[in-house]
Image (cartoon, rainbow, N blue to C red; front, side):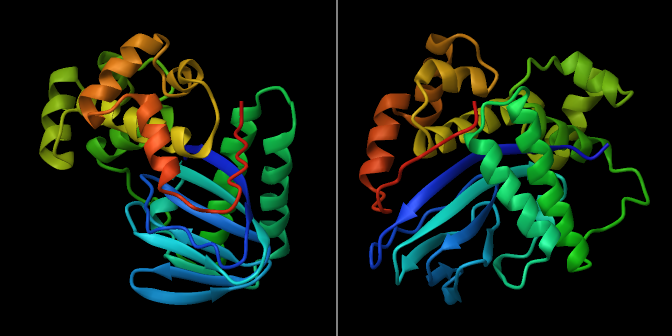
Length: 263
């Protein structure tokens, strides 16, 4: 089954001529330009955007925004659901279905509905698949994915859950030892180290784009104990979560940055 995870979502008011510095994300970021126009700097190229357009920033792609008018941008990050196959750049003339799904995702962000995260996950995945379908980019999975890639997809979309390596291996019908071997061979690190880094990467996104407490962020990334979370974060990032948030926000001049995030 294809899975997706809406890693973050934020609605950001934009001020004309207030550029944001170059930055990147650990997941695929989509930005819907609800209002306003400007230029996206991406991969060294400047690409014009206008109201109703959508930009795609692949993981680790450096990009920045240079707004020419006041506006409003709706940003959301997604892991899974073939999001890595989306081409970077500006998407214009979106289909009615895609636009409506984006607007629904935007509404869900502000709504107090049951199973809110699940709704956001599904909508983000639907938007991604619709874009891929429209551009005939989606590769039909005619053959089973190899086990290490399948394991990585599970970790990318279920990092917020308590994941046992034995259970993960069992879901792939292999032993835990075999999983560790092939994962290290194909991905370059052990499954548990990959999971820890994924949780830290998502925590960095949440510290940047939300005002959630450290305790809430710890829960969002699958670590119930905020003290344990803070210790792991500091070991990986050489900074406490609070200091990281302060530093990254002081370096981002991107309008008022009024952030909202799914609960």
